[in-house]
Length: 611
Image 1 (tube, rainbow, N blue to C red):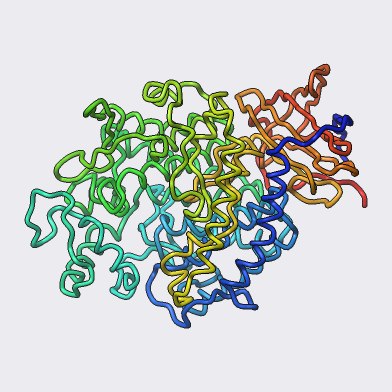
Image 2: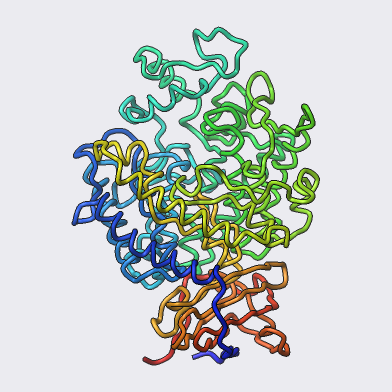
């Protein structure tokens, strides 16, 4: 067992309100996790859903229902939460295998917008239980589908460093899509702008013009062009696959996975350079920009124009850059993402005193200019990028628009009922910068309100069970740990689509020999920096002591250099972990020095010693 520095706090104090409320929320979500699982799933774990399933869409919805569960567990939620989470992963995988959408335990073919909503579930399970040998074997098998090692899934072209189609999975690249593939997506996409401005029969002049995907004749034309223009070749969206490969590295430490991530992000950086500094949203099988789009660098699948615009260019770059930074300790791997944020910033407009950024590009050039508010995804991306790098320069234009972070304390109106409770990081950043002192009470109150709002919706929901998951399950999940992740671990929380959980701190309970704070313990991080962090730990139990093991980085990638308890002297640490002994009702305010990215990252729990 490694030698560890120990800090001891013994003075009884009345626990602050945020600490008792934090513990109450963990206890509340422990209960709602059991209730919700019984409401939405059968005793065998399969979802109360349809008996048959067609098309590509839907696997992500199934997995997303339970993505918050392992996150709650790794904070300190009950052991039963992890048991439910693992049971549901296995059952949903079996269920979609029975539907025919999953083969060899991985989605047969779909895009990485939707894969990236599914597979963070596996990443989070690995954090809670890194010794689950079946999940480890899955990580290796799934990575092989994208590294060229699985002959049944030839998704990867190693010579050209490209993924051969936007539609990919355990069956390999999908170069010819069928009407059946889109059967569930057609009603949704009929509400979006048409993928290309030169689509037959358009009036012209309006880049937001729509076509009716529900009309069989129109859809036949859409499908023909999808197969001709976007089914063959690579798109930036596929950068989300770097998380799956990083996941395999974190289990194994094998350098081939690290190199794959670096090779792939380098390929997209090279394509950006070839295209004059703007990342193309499509390359063909020969790696030629616009190969299937008549030479246009726009118009690709989940590209600059369709269906969502720049978000689906920037977000995969951010996720990939974060992964590469984790694997190397070098935040210059975020330069691709930085370059596109800066490129859009250079194209800003000002109207009525408001800055607008373009979010789409098509035949008409840049369009769909939108105002920047505190919850705008460009703001979220810049905050998350700054968190990984800790470079002041990564907040440059944010400082120009919001020098005092005015309005940053506002959360989105539909949070936390949106997708299980991810909350934008604007209020958290203002707190970390010392500009939002009410943040702890705010985030706790919003979380509690959101949980009870979800429970009320469940109580009143009389829709067919099939329609619950198909249409509005996000608003019904009463497990919302992301606000607590921000509070307790000092992080803006993971990027929802495909992001790993990057933190300055995480906690273990030596008594229960598991991840998460011990029972009755609360944590509040009020500072994170390039060289350290500050955290307050509180034992809310009036009569029993608790011991907390604190680790530097979720993956053990950082190293503590020194620590200071309250106003006491600094103590050298020089290790990845230290212990804090908290007497009954004791509190420990710790300032910590840190050498970030000092160790290879890995899934793993510390040595707790003999029982």
